[in-house]
Image (cartoon, rainbow, N blue to C red):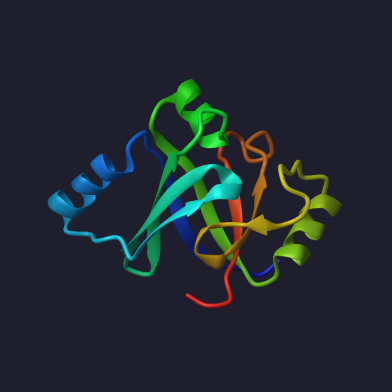
Length: 136
């Protein structure tokens, strides 16, 4: 598996605009994109930080996975995403090693990425996202 770099760190928030206010006003970081990902029932904002990004995740529905995460854990660190060259090959390799996956096939993520999640039970408590992007 060819791991490239930390693509982004996902942070679950209840209010995207309030959260953006902190990042913009306090740290001077402007989002380069804000989008709704209807398939995942959330809105995201990506904030560039020297070669990686912070992704703010706001649920748009009470039954979204991010809403359920916030209900259980509160706002905060949601996941770490690692960029891979070939997400299908990465998933096949992990599956062959018996690693518990949430997604056995990639799905569409924000910013045109193809993503898949590794179950936190396999990573000792960290939700890990594999992320394939054509370019960044």
